[in-house]
Length: 290
Image 1 (cartoon, rainbow, N blue to C red):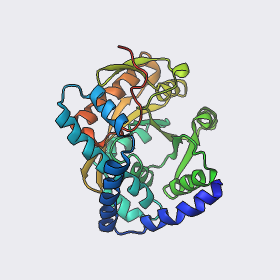
Image 2: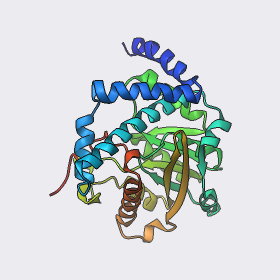
Image 3: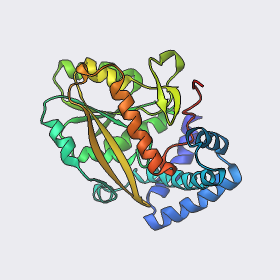
Image 4: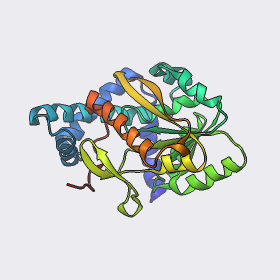
């Protein structure tokens, strides 16, 4: 059944990836109308999340953000499909870096790097960063149940010199590279909700106390990694700009959870600046303390 689903959907994804961008975004507008007005995909979750995170806004203001978000989400998913065939030249034109030198300076310090980012703007096209790094690059992801689509995602990332590792493979991979002095960069999207039985720290996020992922910070401490934050800004439709901010050059000396809390504050800044580009479909506030 998995293979049948794959062979039915793959030609559609490939055809979408071959569309010129003008047609791609016209197609996205059509999908938006279906997803938002007819299907109402996770509209209830999005609406609840916006009310929790942005209570200072009126219902009318949150509704405007909601519609902009769904427009962006449709663009985002089609841009993911576009990654199957997009050229290096084109993705570098559309996803740029304003201060790449900040990251390059970290590479000179002879330590691996934990890169923290959020599910904001285009977190998929951030993979183009691998064209600019001399370190071995790893992205931590959750395995897709359909093994054929899982392999497809791995193959797509490999086009950009990225190695995908599951959460279970993360510690063994980092430990192996540390012992063998393989300088690497590990990408952590640390803004989603962890399972309660694995939550070691609660912190305020958008004014609400929630459990947070601390893996990036703890691994940086254990394996002596520098820590950097990557902020992404949507410049206009189909164009993004990333910038970097160093969070720690000596993670071991920083009090526990301070790096994680600092990361959350930076993510909040992004959201307040342009909330429509955050991934509101995830149940980020499903566990919270009043």
